[in-house]
Image 1 (cartoon, rainbow, N blue to C red):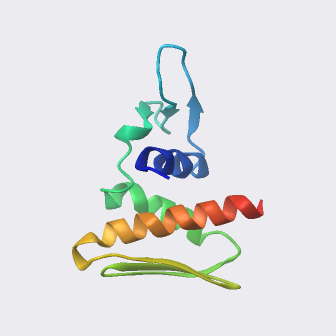
Image 2: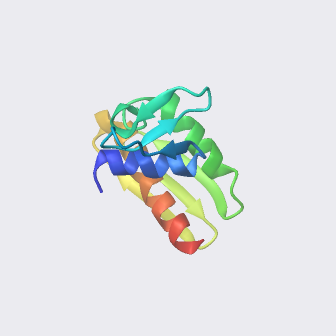
Image 3: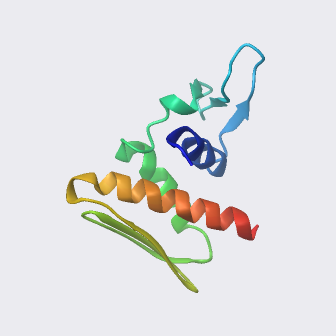
Length: 111
């Protein structure tokens, strides 16, 4: 899954409405303040301001026991195991992003 597909997955999980226009080759998302975004302009992989609300929503789910974000590693503890990603120390947000994507894929497969 590439970054645009991962961003789309996260946006849908967050409840951001999307629509495809005939003159736009990619999906257009409407943020909560009705600003238009394409998947390539979403900053989940590079901004803590973008990814932290996603972690908060995940943390509110019944099957999630705990979320641990440490330097270079993020782990989401579930009732029946955990999902994690590791990265180099300077890429802690990348580890977080990858863990979020893995979690949402798993969550969607169980719905």
